[in-house]
Image 1 (cartoon, one colour):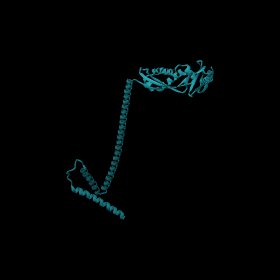
Image 2 (image 1 turned 90 degrees about the vertical axis):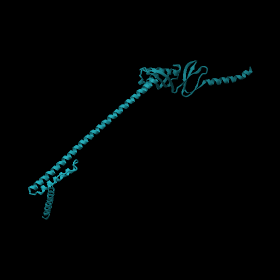
Image 3 (image 1 turned 30 degrees about the horizontal axis):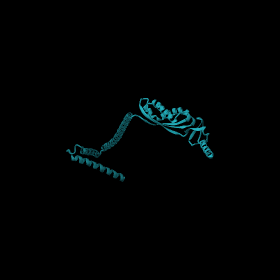
Length: 312
């Protein structure tokens, strides 16, 4: 009996240590614990050191208060135009109220997953294939609005829902590839036709400008030719007038000069003719010599007049 009494303090000390260990609860940062008394929720313990009544109170649920990522598995979804798609997503959520997350729903992550999958089928089923493939942002926003509203009573906040992948069946992928190839070939043909059209327009514009410039050149050349002929005619008229005056004054040498000049010009024209390289023409030499003599007399008279004018 005395021996058992000797062990009693040790037993009491061990019991005190056990009770003290059970009465101290340390909650780590990023978590909140629910405290239950006789199995009923009493309060929520935030990060830090807490004292509880052992055997009467106990930790109920350990809730992660950090933002969490939930992977939504792939599922088959039928679009509005009866196209079968494989869709998976990812959900970002954060617990705001630990007690609600612990006691308002059983298996929180499983509930969020199934709710998201159901709404993916609803949202994608209301859209056709082209909208589903091109409007992911709209799908994400609609899913976020619906799922966040539905999970609000659970004490959580759904921050983002992102569609990870939309996978059409292989035959549909092949069909879209052929369609895309046809569209690209169509655009290439259109661009090529537009290039030919632009080149033809530029060529026509160039030819038009060339014709206009050529016409303006011919116009300018004709104007210059007409001006040259006019000046030549004026010179010819003045020469004729001078010859006429000389004849009226009794000087026949001017007439001989005029006739000799026309005679020599005619011979030059015959010599330069492309189809008359060799020709035989009876020419009276005395008439040509007389004409040349007339030219000499004209020159002599001119020199005599010039000398008399200087002496005077």
